[in-house]
Length: 253
Image (cartoon, rainbow, N blue to C red; front, side, top):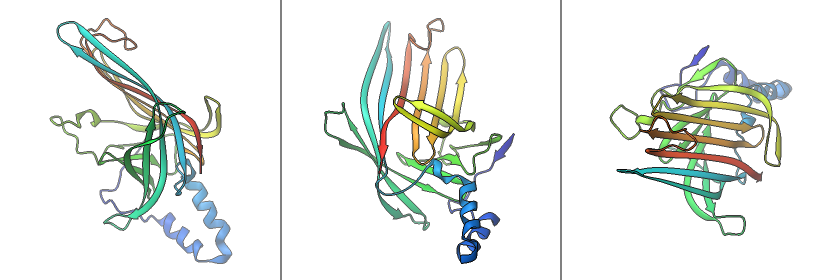
């Protein structure tokens, strides 16, 4: 197993391979080799271009236990669109892409702007700024034995609200694998496990799938605490938490 240490600096890492790539860029006789360097990094698993969009079908379940015996379970079904609409440079001179997130009840309803997030690619990572929290979602190039702390930039401690992000172990569980989601088939995908922990009363699961030339096509996030250890995770009792599944519906530019 190889543990990838994220750079403490937020600036893109200038590695020897990138220096070589830059030399190739400015040498017309070496264009093919430069393209080979970029291809080897496999940045296509998260393409960044203004106009790119992905629509997801979302199933969300919220659990809320009210003492002494009332278990509330609320289930929501809706669509969410992530669209890259603009670019900006941050205070470190890095090019960021603006992701606008829209939601609607179903395909017949109008989109409503929900949130704005940002994403960027460094020489070795794809990072997303989500609700002011920064995550290292992907490591380039993807390899089977690499592990990384994708939550390194989240200010999580044992005593604050971000505690749930402590000790996550990001790693690839599949690389270049085909997957079919609904009516969409993708020939090359990477599967990322972010956390998968369980005991009698707590369960944490977070995983994502990225398709080449598309980006994120599947996400599952589950964080539940239940005090009734006999009840199953599929129907927990005395439980609080959330379970969200996002499946790609359509995508384009």
